[in-house]
Length: 195
Image (cartoon, rainbow, N blue to C red; front, side, top):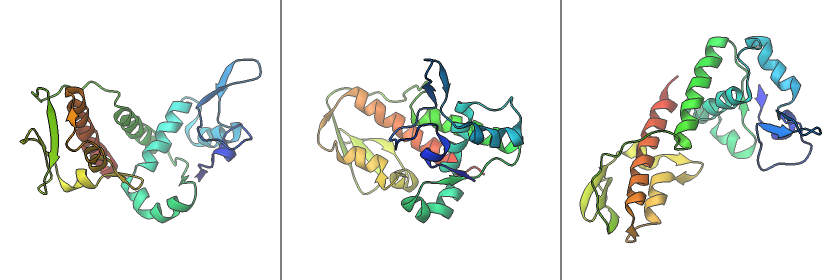
């Protein structure tokens, strides 16, 4: 199992709050921040051609966002660093890397998105008990319970974003961001359910 304990797999010795994939070595050259033993565990199963820091990160990211993984280890994840299994095959690894790369792209909002909205300023947002999001008293987004209940950690993403903006005037950019956020949540839910 990969112990995603940053101290164990990264080269640095100090406690860290961020873990870059690459670091500058003593000769000011860029090198992997993963320890060689960690990379070698992947190479044993996959060979050299499939290994990159970005792919390893995508593999881990896919696991940490897998609904079965979250359900099985939710209580443990609250207490300790997550453990992710090393890949058993190239096929599994490639599939998880692909899924992880899609999730990363979604979560960074790093994709082209064409809005379906036609809105004008000023905008006021309101939510009623029917899981519909109203802007200027018109239904703008019709969501479902999965989207409303979607969490990152303990935070309900959509409801927290909306609660922070109820009765405020929003810009068109805010509404377009909300539309994109709902899209990201919908796609994330679909990807998380893939096995």
